Each structure stands twice: as C-alpha cells, then as structure tokens.
Image (cartoon, rainbow over all chains, first blue to last red; front, side, top):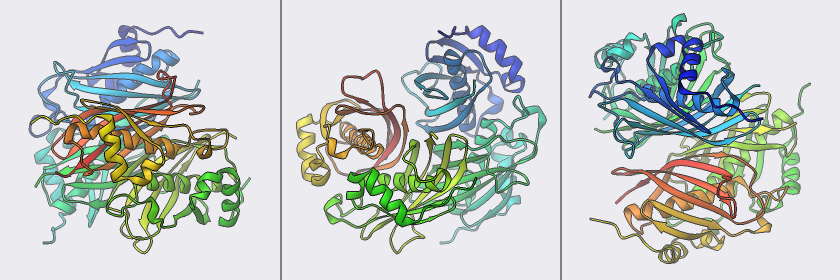
Length: 140
Length: 140
Length: 140
Length: 140
C-alpha cells in the first residue's frame, strides 16, 4: 500500500500540534516528495554565535527535523519515528541568511529509515555548510 | 607549558559573555578537570517533546557544550575551538529531570581535539541516554 | 533468562567455523565478560602500510570483530548479529606491535546493541590509536 | 594552481607501488574526475562471510580506498592523506558480484578533505549496500 506524501502545509500543521515549542522556534517544512523533504530555519539574529555564525546545535536541530519530515513520505504523518543516531560534519561557517536543509532517503527498512541531509545558507546551495547521515527508528 | 584549567565559575562567566543566547537557555558548566568537563541542562517543561521527552537537539546542544568546556582544559579559555564533526547515538528515552553531560578527552592533537560525551538524566548515571564521539578544531 | 558468557576458547572455535577466511587472517578473541570482549590482531609485517603503519581497514576489521564478540555476552554465541553502523576516529599512528581492541556495551535494546571499542598497540593501553562507536542489529 | 587529475591507470600504478599488500587484494581504481573517484573490489568467493555475503570490513576497505583516490584530485598523487574519521552505515546485504564504491568530495579545506562514498554491488547502482561519510587529513 502506497503512503500518501503529506503536503508541506499538512506537515507544518502536524508539527505545530505535536511539537509546539520547536515550531515556535520558527523551523518550517517547505517541500515534500518521495523520499525527500526540505526544511527552513528563518534567520534570527538573536540566536547567533560570536562572529554572527549560525550555531552547530541550530544546524543539528534543522537537520534532525528535515530528516523527520522526510520519514513521513515513508511511514505517513506519525510522531512514532525517533532519531536513532546521527553523524554531522561541519564544512564551512554558516552566516548571513536563512538555513536550508534537504533530507534524502537512503534506505527504508522494516524498522529503520536511513538518510542523509545537506545544509546550506539560502542562496548558496552549491556551498553546503554541513552534512548529516543517520537513521531513524519507527514503531508502527 | 601547562594550561591552567578554568573553574566552572570562570567557564560560566566566559560562556555568558561569549554566547549570551545559549547561556540564556540555562545550560551550565558544573565541573572541570584535566581532559574532563561536566555540563547540566536544568529541566524545563516548556521545551519537552510529546511524551515529556527531552529532545534530541537539546541533548546534542548539551553534549556540544560539554565538549567545548572540556577543550578549555587543553587550549585554555578561548572561543577559538569549533565543532568539526559529532556522532550521536541515542540509547534510551530521556525524561523527568535535569540532563547531565560528561565530556572526556580522547586525544589532543596539534589542531584537533577528539573526545567522547556520555549523557544521562540526573540521578541515573549508570543509564546513559545518549553517547557522543567527535572532534573540535582549534586555531591558536 | 541469563545468557551464559562464552569463553575466549569457545568464541575462537565458533569464529573459525563461521568465518574461516577472517579467522585465517589471525584475528583472535582474548577475553570475554559481561558486556565486554577483547580481540587481538597479531602483528604481521606483510600487511603494513608505508611507514610500517597498521592500516585503517585492519583497525576497522579488528574493532568490528571485538564488537561482534561482545554481542555474544548479550545474545549468546550466534552468527545473527550484523553491523548496522560504525563511526571510527583515528587518534594517532599505529605501529610496531600487535593491535588490541576492547569492546564495551553501551546499551542492549530489543533488536539493537550499541557499544564502543577502544584500540591500542600492545604495551600502550593509555595511548589509544583509534576509537569506534556504533551498533549491531540482532535477529533472534 | 590547478591539480592535474591522475588517470585511473596512474592511480593504480601509484597504488601498487605504495600499498603492495592492499593492491594484491585486488582493489582497483576505475574512474577519476574532479572531486570524484570510483573503486572496484573484484568478487572473490574466498573472502565471503556466511550466507555468501561481502563483509563489512571489505566494504570499509573499499570505501576508504575510493576516498583516498578521490583526494588525489584535490592534492595530487601523494601518499600524505590519511583517514581522520569515517562513519559507515550498512543499508542492505551485499552479495553476488563485484563491489563498486563512488567517492564524492563535499569540501576541501586547508588540511581536511570531507567527502561521502556510496557502495553498491555491480549491476545495481540504485540499491546502495552501504554509505560512508568522513574526512581525510592531508599534510603538504
């Protein structure tokens, strides 16, 4: 049975209901597709690090969220998928605009969903600032 | 030349000055030693996930911070060390009390500091909720 | 029901039967205990890299094996546990003697066993050459 | 100054000279390009695991090698780049034919080269068996 891929609007409504505090931090889903999701962190000067840098934890949080949104195209809109392990490597300083994260499915197993996430600063998709690989576990 | 290991009070004063927004999130340094640092996230019900769980990004942020505090025992109190890569594996649900992270040095190289971080919920140090390994790069 | 922890001799006999080619490469189990296993790679000059270094793949293979031996104390002597993901970080050059790997359990879940492995050159246990964290999946 | 990208033949000649034992294991470079390299492990029934599976260490060794070949397009033909850390996630059983690994550059920094590697069994490039992310350090 094919899973219906939820629209970004459906994802954001679900997200606001399930994770009100993270949603309040202004992360958003922007795109969904088969084995794909894009999330955005709207630039917020109040959360920057010295040197006006977007912090590692902000990048991790957005990557984790994009990955979770991507799992919806595999298991449907469900809060049941939890992060199992993630590896993040930082590639260059992130600064100056919104942060974008694009998650892609590598493999959907019976209980484990593996994927990767590429992050960049809006306007420079060819200059990734970090890269994540990892897996979620889902309990149906 | 030996580095003087800063006290937790010195670390927290430095942290408040350098990262006011993260400091405002109430993360704190609690212990320092040679190649060791302990950080605490005071329980905050407003930031929990469904099921009253302490989120993955909160755990990552605390681990990253404990690691940074630990680098001070290698390079001194300096904002120059940045996260290079981190691998986090989640071991069990985290809930119900403060989160504690203990970072330990694995190796201090010329430009790279490698270490691991163990996280647990206050009161249950023998039941880690997550484990981090990774490296910081420091520019003297 | 408690699992009986197999002796190093029982592990090596099982290993020789199940993985004849890896066993032929002279890797051995040396110690077992609850949530612990130690494996050894006997020094072999024919397999070294330029500079007489013990290669990364040799270290990975030994770590993977020590981890597998460690899973026997959780699930018993069974070939059913397979590597799910491993993160290896190299700490210093490895040279001059046998390689030792000590695997320790972090968490045994229903289907996933998480652990870490520390590797050193025989005689220098306080100078780890690499460190591994990761997980095995077991199917009962 | 642009680096001249060595041909697969030049890479294999260099590899045979620098790493005779690994070369003897029949790993080969098959393709090179800007920020890209493809390596092959010719199927060898004598090295399989129970169930006729291509082992994790064989996959790790091939990925590490493809990554190393890829660094030549950044720093030229030099043995000076060493693995710093690698994360490998296994996606599905690998069996039945040659193993292929394609390494791609994520970022070339001053001393650190970050990249990812996708591995598949020959004939099934759309069904990756494992995925690696990590970094090499090079000393000019």
